[in-house]
Image 1 (tube, one colour):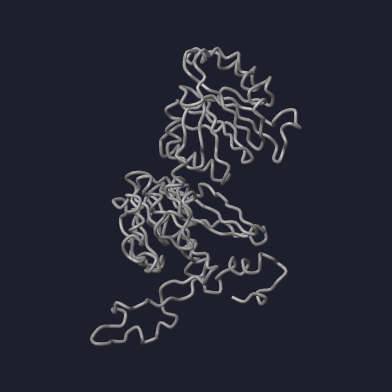
Image 2 (cartoon, helix red, strand yellow):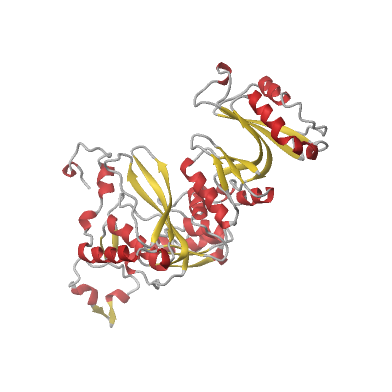
Length: 449
C-alpha cells in the first residue's frame, strides 16, 4: 500500500536519512516512490497500516503519515485518480464521523476557497457526522505551490495530493529536550532536534551501547537514552563532565529527564589517550568533535616531553597525583582528529554499527573539506546543515564486517599514517578560512589568531 509522509519544513537533507534509518530499526520493508527536497511530501510503499504507524512512532522530522489516495497536477486529475483507485475503500468509512483538512504548502486559501475544495469531494459516499474535533477519520487535501506564489493569481498549484490520516510523529519531543529548559548546558551543546535526529540516524535503540568521545554536557547520550540506548561519554575537559555538581551537571541532565538508569558512565580523557579497550563493543558512536574555531584544538600531552616538572615530588606525592592537578595539553591537528575518530570507530564498533559525527566545511567548492574515508567504514549518508558561508555535515558510516574490508587498502592506510603523521600546522584549514570569511583573496598573514 502507498502512504504519503508529510515532513516538517526543516533540515531537508536529513529527512530521508532518518526515515530510512527508522525502517532499519523497526525492520520495516520501505520502498521510496517519490520525493524531492523542495517538497515536504514523500510517497512510500509499506506493507501495512501498522507498519506506517510504527515507522513514525519515533520520527522527529516528520509530522504525519497518510494512506495515499491520489496525486495529480490538477484537481480534475486528482478526482479521477481517487475515483479510479480507491472506490473499494469507501464502504469502510461510510458510517463513521470524519472531517477534511487543507494543507497548502507555500500558499494560502480563503475560507470560501477551502469550502469549495472540500465540497468538490462530495462524491465520496460518506454519511457519518462531520466533526471538527476528534472525528473517527481525518482526510487531508495537500497542495504544493511555487515559492513566494500568490495562489489567487495562479490557476493551479504545482501538485495536489489526497490522503487519509494514519498516524502522527513524536515531533513534540523536541520541546521536552529544549536546551532552554535544560538545567545544564554550554555554548557548544547540540540543539535537541538535531541531537535526536543524529540518534535516529545512528540507529540508537534499546539494548544498544552508544558512546560520545566529546560528550560535553551530554546532548547526544541523552538523545540516545531517550530511544532506549545505554549512553557513555568522555571529554578532555573534566569541568564540563562534572559541572557544578547536583542538578547542574551531566548526570543531573539525565536525572532531569528520568534517564539516569540509561547513563553508563562518563570519564575524562581525549580520543588519543583513551582508556577504552580497543575491542568491538559499541553499537554506535555519535559526536560533534571540536572544530578549533573558538580556540585551537588540544589533546593531553606535554609540549616538551623532557620537562621534569611533571615528575616533581611535593610532600611525598607526585605533582600529577594532586587533586588540583590540571593535565597539560598540546596542539592537535584537525586532520588528525578526523583520522583518529575513524580509526577508533573501526576498532570499537560492532559489525554494521554506526558512526555519526558532525564536520564543518566551507560552502566554496575550492575550500570544501572532503568527506574522510576508512577501509573498514562505508559511508551511509551525508546530511548538510547550511549556514551563510559555511556548512556542517552529519556524516554517517557503517562498520563493515571483516569479510567486506579491503585488506590491502587497510594495510596501506596504516603504513601511510606511520610515515606521514600530522603536525599542529595542519590545524586548521577550516579555522583559517572561517576567520577570513571564507574569502580566497587573502593570505594567511591577513589573519590574526
